Image: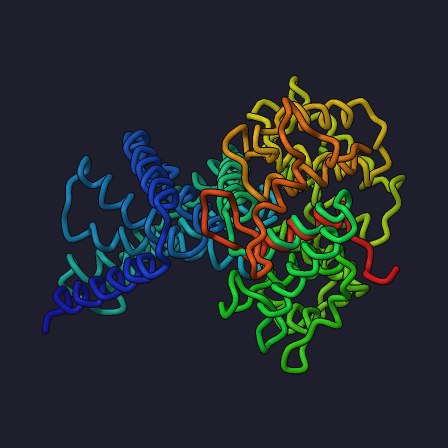
Length: 514
């Protein structure tokens, strides 16, 4: 077998493995659309800078995609960008090598996030992009040696690398310059997208929603109903617990930190000590400790886990050898925000208050000041910041954070609470951004109204029933909370979030029993 044939066989296997991995991740339609858009952007960037040898933003775009979205999307963007751009430059035996080289850049970005976290600064990201440029150059030098040299000696390989060195260095330097110029902006944009559809907005299994709704309901129900609805949701969460002590998106599903943490918060809000909820001798905190390594670069994960640990009466400074509060603080931006987002900053404030930081603490004050400045003209908040459409979830999260920061009586809080009250739907519930009602948005709205000093049980806009009644209508006989009246989904985290709302609690939730 010839060198060329062998190399293309290995290349084909590597590319097939990469795309198979991407397909096995079962990307949603939104992920597919984003990957296609980023691949087109990377290809266009290569074409636009064609007159300048070795100067192109393609490597940066691919690496930063992997850094924020993960290895599979990063690989797909790099490989597709190479294939698409060569429709302009011409296809040839170099195409699969370029696909592999840029696909590898996406994997490098994902590896960087895993090792160093997703909160790296501008200079560190620029250095990574420069290194990725050198790696891409090495792959292409190897392709020249294999495909065109005819002499596969080490001396010839060294000659290829030597003659290509000026171009490879120019590519690396250009990558660093491009990243310094637009890298952080692209990271923020991708992070907003990732946060929106993967964490904040994706309907999950029933556990968290039930917990949140349950917490909201307990405030204004008649005594018998008040006890019955939360009790059923509590039992549902207890039955959903796995043998490892954690909970997954639905009963029997693999445990995750996300669903376990939300369950702990909801149970504590309903007066159930999370450490007393056990299965197989393990409780919720045992699971979170054993799987502390699964908490990666996302600041929201750290904040949520800090809230869950404090609700369980456990210090977040010692979780599997990690100090989550210190890790959270390293994510501060110069403007006082965390990751430059409203929802991430709001959760960071709530987590810091749960961890014992005083409202007068400098970090808390600066984060609260950032939140105040992000309020829209209508009084509401958007997860990404000022100017985006206001939503119930983010408005309520900002209100809770500002109240926790000692600013409950501030004008911005009153205006946000008024925005929530104005956007109640006719069925009593709340939608994400003015759409159909759902349990998650309603649970958040209830908590936001409570944090602002208003009574959700008395909110009957245009003759609608109260948001608490809406939440009660979604509780199934099993205790799970449906995502909406038209949806059969009963995500665990929706149940947990609903439980918190039904219990009349806001974040942070104090340990049960206090």
